[in-house]
Length: 81
Image 1 (cartoon, helix red, strand yellow):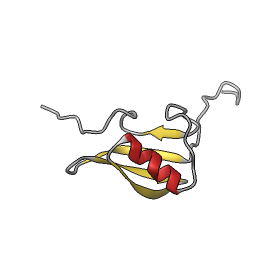
Image 2 (cartoon, rainbow, N blue to C red; image 1 turned 180 degrees about the vertical axis):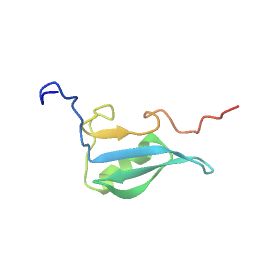
Image 3 (cartoon, rainbow, N blue to C red; image 1 turned 135 degrees about the horizontal axis):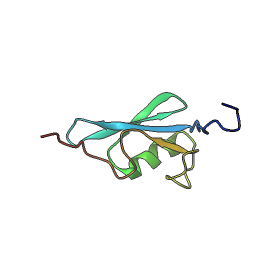
Image 4 (cartoon, rainbow, N blue to C red; image 1 turned 30 degrees about the vertical axis):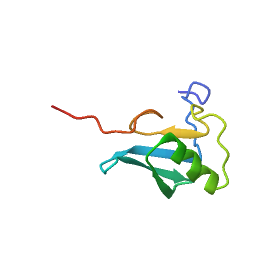
């Protein structure tokens, strides 16, 4: 595989990890590979980023934010039956 044919993998500064159990459930937010806080809502992600000096203009931009275990609308754990 040539370098040009390789898939592009962005390395965003902000990573929002999967939903964790809690009341209410939350997601861990990492900035530059370090745990920066917990988010229970989309607004919390923006607050954690702002506290780290990062202004987020587009939460859907994979070069800015990587959503792991769901997207920006995933704030609860899915239940298996």
